[in-house]
Image 1 (spheres, rainbow, N blue to C red):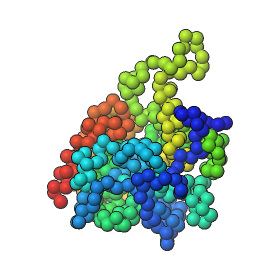
Image 2: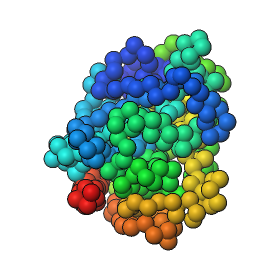
Image 3: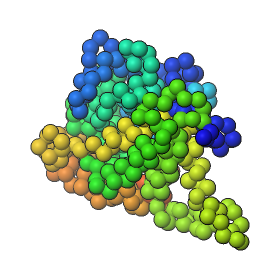
Image 4: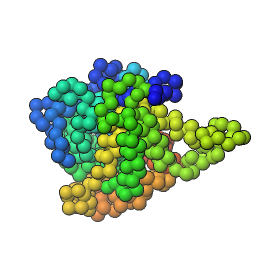
Length: 394
């Protein structure tokens, strides 16, 4: 079945960036080519290229570098407009730039597409070094720690031995935490927003439902679908996974405020597929993601989040978080029903118990988990005050 997009054209089998596509604002660095990269879960990658973007200039002492870590369906394009090779505006554009909260006249800001992603960093859609065909089903499972190790390799090549701050929300917050635990000597400060020390059963349950939506699409073909024509890839499954996620990314108050019971169709005579406005909204977001993302990367990164547990192999969460020595900002979103404030309070208590200086903030938003991507008038000043304070102390 041909699967149309919102503009009526067929959706590509994968929305991944591929070699030969316009690079947009991406820069590329091969961080591993002459030796194997052993993954935490037992897999091996012989070659890793990372795609990243930078804003601002690294100062002479290399002391003004800030690392932004993106969430599940984000990428390295944290700031700037859409354009050739880059289908969306920067996901934190109101926060990053000259004169903004993360002022690129002061800071050298870096954002890296994660390992296993689909926007230029080695992932399932990338060419396998043996036959140059997409990895597809051959790509191994990765973890947050694997992602952070590749970011550390890039930092070495950029000449950044210590980040002024490592900042992220949701899956990005997991990376920020791992940076502070794995490389405490390389992190001057850390910010984790709407994240957790370990994925909860609720999060894992929602993740599984989304993954099943993809693998039960017959067009998924076990993960090997990259040679399929436009309109013939596993986009039905990916769109369904996104619809499911979009519901728990928002809150009841947010959806009620925006849609209530407004309808798209008249509904004067009942029809099974007449739509409410909220259904149209979910359809839109499903199709929008399918055009710019990859089903295999969605599966892989979704699993990265489920596997996240800072205490794994380290004697538990308390022992792991005691490794954090840098000033830390933990932020919650009061209406977040996916990464609930309880989890950030746990982080606050465990990190504080280890002796690290810690600040805690709550973002006042009706928008649920997505609040850190919406409430820029709160997120921006919060980051500005925290990072500026760290910079003054160095």
